[in-house]
Amino acid sequence: MVDPLTLGGSLGLGGFGVYLLNRYWQQRQAQLRAQALLEKYSTQSRIGLHQGRMRLLVSMPQVGELPLAEQEAWRERDERRNQHFLDLGLLQADDEPPEEGIPSDEERLEALESRQQWMDVHEPPLSEHAAVVAEEHVGSGVVVATEADEEPEVDMDERLEREGGASGEVQISLAWDDYNDLDLHLFCPSGERIYFNNKKSECGGHLDVDMNVRPVSNTPVENVVWHDDAPLGTYKVGVHFYKHHRKRRTKRTCKYRLRVITHGRSREYLGTIKYGQAMQMVTSFSLTDAAHKG
Image (tube, rainbow, N blue to C red; front, top):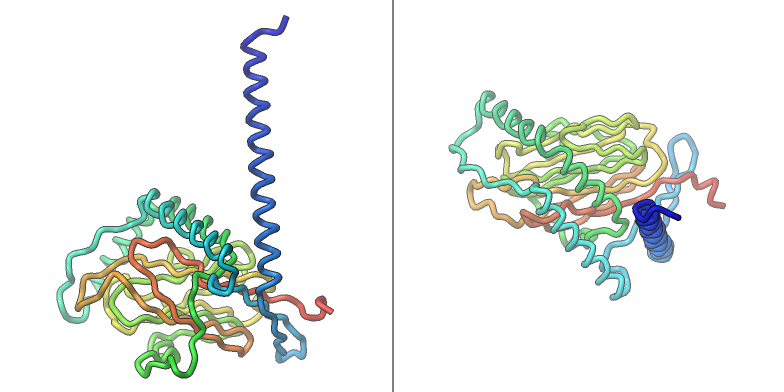
């Protein structure tokens, strides 16, 4: 006779196994569906390199380029990400308005120490949230900037030169026009994430400009660059509204401009992010060996 406890345990384990199998099947179906969408709506272009080799640039779609049903599915995922962000306790309280004038070196160090103290507690949940964001393949709805969208005060190169930002084979730059602290999060082909707490990746990427930990500029810029030998694979660009600084009419909604340069080919995007919103997967692209694509 089988012991009832043993039988119950076996049935329980069996039920859990069925649950895991079903969950895996659902995730696999979602991955296949996402891959089919990307293959249908992504764009491809060949890039010539100075060594004479060819690379294929595959740009992933924005949510507005998808059918309405897929747009609705994306919005549902985005709502879950927003709730996930709040559930993890990642929303910070506003600081007291800082004193006017240029911050001293001591004040800058205090701001960096304060951020590090926050990271000592919140790095695990922030990494958990970033991992959820990295699962997204569809861009958050930024629009490609045109000449008509040019604003004289948004000179990306001028800001990068001012802050000592470098250029390279792959370069992603973020600019905005207030004292808030936005952050670039670059999900690398290696699986690493480049951001303010991990500025250099083993695959050669480097965050060399990180601004407004303390609200020092209303023309800030951030920059991630691969000087050379940028790896093949998928790059995902995340934007996070890290902190709202209460200074000179700085608001909780922030417009930004993002520029992506791949082997000399440049594309700029315009987007908006709100304080308290989940990290946004703004755009993603893949570099592959064109010779292997026929």
